[in-house]
Length: 371
Length: 267
Image (cartoon, rainbow over all chains, first blue to last red; front, side):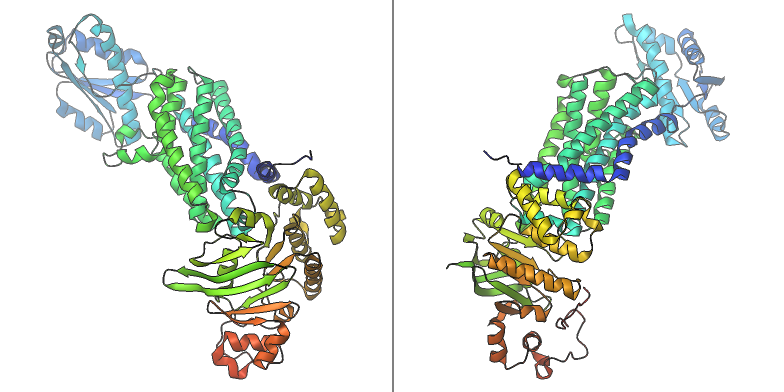
């Protein structure tokens, strides 16, 4: 029987050759996760230290004193004073003499002792909203820590607070960044690179030749996409390795599950790339389309840098259609919380659904007869 | 001898615009068929329907014995196509391009090797087998692209303005290759803007406004329209208003329309 190279294999060999031949692009793509993790890890960390805190404690008692003590002992906070009314706080904020105010209601200890909720307000200077929300989070973490200690034996007694910080008790921002960075790198190699490589064929006229050949549309798509999937694996490994070696980012869950989720997410990106390429008519348009349609939302609307909870109400539902948002939930869950399939089936299902939808759209828009 | 291409009332509409209006013609096996028409006359739309890139609105067409609507897979397997844009991969070597298209068309590895050897010999490209295609001169590239389009020995080959931008000597060599392919039994369906080239075709059709305005051997067409050259026939048909001064390009025509002069016209 004569040896015979299947059409799909011949096509993939060609794609790998394109990829290997363009040394500059390939080196950039391979070094990208390294550079990104290092840059984000060192330069863009938004940990905040030396937070100046002022207490509003109209009727000090043993609980409020204990809580104030926790702030002093925390290390991140510097207590600038204790005032009697909230009215005294604003001038301090205006003069930039304080960053955060923690206001207790009178009778704090007594209310807790009676089993009633005791209220406190954490007010932070949010002129830089990002820093503001982070300071708020640190303060919340201190109070939560205290509450967990004293609340242990008492039913119903609690300190009323709004947000919580869990699973990242050291609140290291690099821990939160790394899953987002993996999403970003994967988006880049999948959506952006496929869009570029496919629209190049379209622009140069070679796509027409492929469509006239016996290759089927799905073979063209799979052949385009698989080499990038392999590149994506290399990228995830680099990002994880750097995160672990340089920043000691913990990895608590299953590596296999993370790689599987990365594959799923990459395929969503690849399908999006194909879709973008088939809807644009030039390489340049495809590149801008991919930047605008995938990279930007993956960075800004995914919760990677800006918490979704602090986005305006109308914007929050928009994040639901950003694939990176769901992948980041999965990656953070696996890496930082060590949770598995049972807890993560919802975001994984959402990603699978997105994959099916985008893939169907991509293959349909590729039907040569519709060209 | 059956027809290699049979077209019957083939029509394609885009909205209210009829790009191809019920055209009918046959092309015999081994024939070199010239498909002419001014830009916008519907040539490209017609070709796209024949090679399966566009669905007809109505009518039918058979290529290499297969229906373009229902057997597009078989059609694709039995045709070759060289587009007006360069159809090889610039960043791959000559050998790699051959391996790709050989594989895509389902040739055995042994057949790919044999045909590669023959092809490199014919084109005297042996020295450049491992050079990237981008490093070859345009004339070589076009000849290579044509040979690669013939690699799987298609029964019909579609050439869409294959000689655009190449020098007269290469054009001549290119036409020698076309004749060689036709002599081996391959049907050649070629569009061109060079009317001197059209004279080399066995038969020629001229499309005007989506319809076939003339069809016959170059000799027949010249007799039918009482003109000395195909060039004059073409101008007369393509621009009836200028018919009286056939052969002279009247002022006011856009450069895209003045498609006649033999010799390299820059595209």
